[in-house]
Image (cartoon, rainbow over all chains, first blue to last red):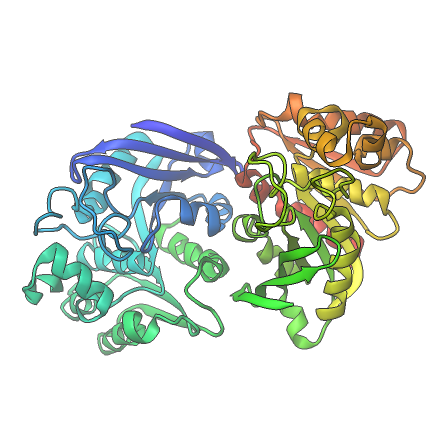
Length: 277
Length: 277
C-alpha cells in the first residue's frame, strides 16, 4: 500500500493510496478520510462510498463536503475507484462500460472477467485491507450515487449481516431492466438474464429474508429517473415487505453533486445512528 | 446575460451565467448562489469570492462547501472567473500569467491592456450587474484564495467604504515583492515598480486611513508560505496600526481546497456578522 497524497481536512486527514489488488489483478486507488477521533487512539466505524459512472475516488472526496460531517460524527469514509484501471485493463471507449463503469459486479465474460471483479474487491478485499491498516472497527455501512447507489444497495442486500445500514442518492435500483444495466450486465455477465438477477436490488429485496435499514434520496428534476433509475420500483417492494425504508423525493434537485452535497449530512447521520457512532 | 446552468443546492440555487463585459471587452463567466431566503422575496447581502491561479468560477463552487453555510446565514455568493478568456484574449502558455491568472489588476501594458481589466470588472462592473439583476442588497464583503486572497484584501483596502469586511485563505499579501507578483505585475503594469504598489496589500495597509475588519487563515504546511505568501508581513503592519485583523495559522493544513473547505464556515460567519446577515 503506497500513500499518494495526504491533506489535513476538518481536523482529520484525507489520504489517497494505491495498492496491488488480488481480486482485480491490477493496481487500485482508493481514498480514506480519518476523522480527528482517530488521532486520539480511537477506532471508528466506516462508511464506504461507491461513486457513479465516470467517477474515481476524487469526485466524492472533493465535492460532497462529507468530511465535515464525518469529523463531527467520528466516522471514517472509504472511497474506492469505480473500476479496475490501467493500460492492460479492458475498456470500451464509452462512459457506461469498462474503465470508470465497473458496476460493482464480478464479470464472468471475456474480455472483462480477468480484472472486473469489483464485487469481491468492495465486499472482501478492500474492507480487509482497511480493517488491517487503519484505526477502524469492523462496523460498517455503505452508500453511493447512481451506479454507486446500485452498488451500495445491492451489496448491502446481499450481505445484510456485514453492514449496519445502506443508503443511496439517485440509485439504479433495477439494473436488470434499464438501459445502463442492460449494457453493462450483458457485457460483464453474458446474455442469460437470469445471471443478472443476483446483482439487481429489486430482485434481491423481493427475495430477502434479512432486512437492514435503507435510505434513498432522489431529486425530482433528475433527467435519468424514468429510463434509468425508477426508485418507485424498489419502494413498492419495500412497502409490501414492510421494510425499514425511506425514499425522499427532493423537489428541484438534479443528478449532480450539488444534490449529493445538500443531503450527505442526513445520510451520514442516518448511518451514524445505526453504527452507534 | 445568459444562463449557462442552474442547480438546486441547499434549498437555494447555484446558477452560472455568461455576459459580454465592457471592462474586459470579452465574454465573462460567473456563478451566483442564491440562498433560500431570496425565494421568499427577500434581499440578501453578498460575499464575493476571488479564486486563485488556474481556477475559474467552478473550483470554489464545487469544492468549498460554501453554499451550505450561505443558505443558513442568508448570504448570496458571487464567484467570478479569474481572468478574461477566449481565443482573442492574450495568453502566455503558463499557469501564473495570462488566462486564469488576471491578478485582479487593470493592465496598462501590451498585449494585456485591452482585456486584462479585472480590477474594474470586480470592483465596478460585476457588482452593478449583480445588484441590478438579483435579489441582493448593496451590502457586500469579499474573500478569496491565494491570488484571489491578494485580490480580496487589495480591493477591500482600496475601497473600504464599499465592503463591510474582507478575508483570505493563504493570500499573496505582498505581490510587489514575491515571484508570482513580480512575474505578473512586470507584464501587466510594466517595469516601474512604483506602479505596482497600488495593488500591493502591504503597501495599501501601511498607507490606509480607513480600516475594515480583516480575517486571514493560513495553513502551516503550505509550501508557498516562504517564497510567495508571507502573511506575517501584513500582520506586522496590522499590529503596528492596531488594525481589526486576525491571522489564524492552522497546523497541518496545506494550500488546497481541503484547507478552504475546513474553514469557509468561519469566514462566512465572520462576514455575516459584519454584513448584519
